[in-house]
Amino acid sequence: MNASQNARFAYIRGQIVPVSDALIHVSDLAIQRGYGIFDFFKIEDGHPFFINDHLDRFFESARILKLQVPAQRDEIEQAIHQLIARNEMPSSGIKLILTGGYSADGYAPGESNLILTQHALKLPTNEQVEKGVRVISYPYFKEFPAAKSINYMMGIWLLDVLQQERAADVLYYHDEVISEFPRSNIFMVDHSGTLLTPSRNILKGVTRKNVISLASRSMTVLEKDITRDDLYGAAEVFLTSTTKRILPIVEVDHRVIGNGKPGPIALGLLTKLLQLEKQDKGIKVA
Image (tube, rainbow, N blue to C red):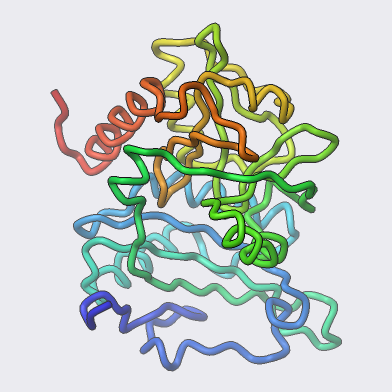
């Protein structure tokens, strides 16, 4: 990573400061108890993608975890644009973090700290999109799944398992019903051509929302419980997220999905999603 890809500034407690000065005290519940929320969105040519959706989710996550955001929405948007201008990272991502605050007893929340950081992006390679990826599943039930919490303990703990299995990601399930990946949502296409995605115990991703909207124009989309057996017998499977967009899955738990190649629905929706991103930037699409 060259110097131009490193953020020089961050926003913390109402000010933009050099990254080296963006510090929080050890008493913060984000450190003491892993209590806090965040959101993340892409920047391209200085444009934050789907910013309203991400801010909606950020404030909803704060509500679920009973955290007060110490800034108005318009102040946060202003800070985002100021940070983009200061860091001069045209293609990147911004993370909004809201901590549990400085705690007097290491347990009760204090006044939350609002932090904005900017990061270089890592997008899927052309090979991953063209060939698809392998995933595995693991039994796990998230606390407060509708909130984008900073707690990724299970996903991080399983990283060595992913490496051993040569898998791209791990899919959580409970009582055989699938939910989501640590940082992505999941979709499947059944053999009738219906697009399915889990309806509960998930974080409703912004890309998930966009994919449902795009797909609904030309096919049936259902949000419902999906079992692992349903997934193993799917015609297509793919995951969605801000940084991965739409990434085809060709193998789940060593079971080949469909014909073992990325399917036309996933790839077609990816094309439409890229067009939607252009429209969000104000670029006319034929």
